[in-house]
View 1 (tube, rainbow, N blue to C red):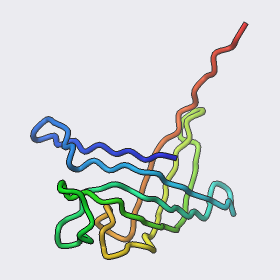
View 2: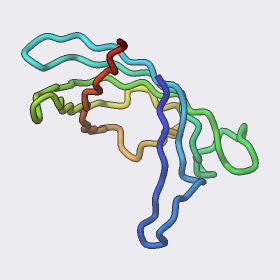
View 3: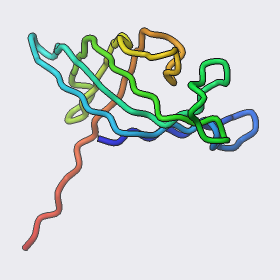
Length: 122
């Protein structure tokens, strides 16, 4: 799939285009209990890399394509009626030269999945 993040600065009431992150992500999970699963992810993100961590092979704006690999646990649960909630705890196991867009190696994510009704054709 594709991952796209936008950075919004509420103090300035504007989006920060320099802080955007985007790129492909592939993941796999193995369910081993009621709602629990082991999860592995590999991604290749275009992100702003601070000069002190840069490989020197970046564009003039300080952006680079950075690979990452993460592994951890995931939990899915019923949130409300048909809405599913999910929570991931991942550890960044591959961060070459500390250029990852994540500030810490331990990453926690949460989200919701909303069902979409398909239109019936008549």
